[in-house]
Image (cartoon, helix red, strand yellow):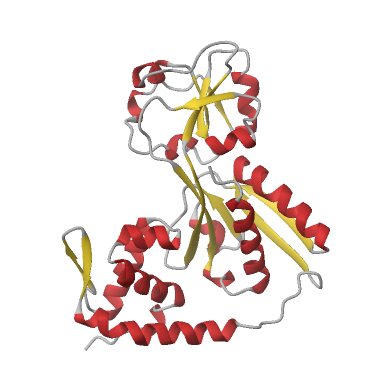
Length: 300
């Protein structure tokens, strides 16, 4: 007889279960927890396997809990309350210890969040030291191998030992030089424009964040660059365009004009991602709170 492996049930899994139970929807649970729908679905699949019960069945536009799911509500809440008590009042003083952290991210999150964070924390007396590596389209192994302790990315990797939190959401925009031309005014004009794009060391490009459009119709890029800061010199004084988030206007692409895309495209969310080993580390938690506070002021 198969036995339930209770060690598979960590705090994140239990919190996700309660959120689905309260929202009766995977998409609403993802919005509330600030994670992707795929992360919620992955966790729900894990729960179903461990507990040997479907837990939720589809009913119309939502989910209906099974009798087993309903019976678990109070026990799960009690477990979470107990886990929370384990970490309360843990001593941590950011002024009394050095805090070193390596962060994987690309140009925009790095430039918009961390200069302000470093100025503010050092002004308070905290001894924070930051090291950055390029995330590109990030791989789980960066976190699992401890080559970085935190990621900020619009393309969060998903895994049972990975935590994520949505920081902000921003629409995609066309960046161009308004002294040279107007932005494309239709899907056809956009596809036929001369594009600049960023391609990361692993060969994947930044266009991966464009969802819900047929990218095969878009003309191949005229210029391919390794990072976003290199875009403005090529776009200035030319007919080239670049497609990036509206937040880039406050960072690497501040020197360019921008306009909305002339077609429907999903906005881009940026997520903060970390490994489960850091979930209760007080220094890591302190830094995540600081990052969230700054990100909240940038929301577009």
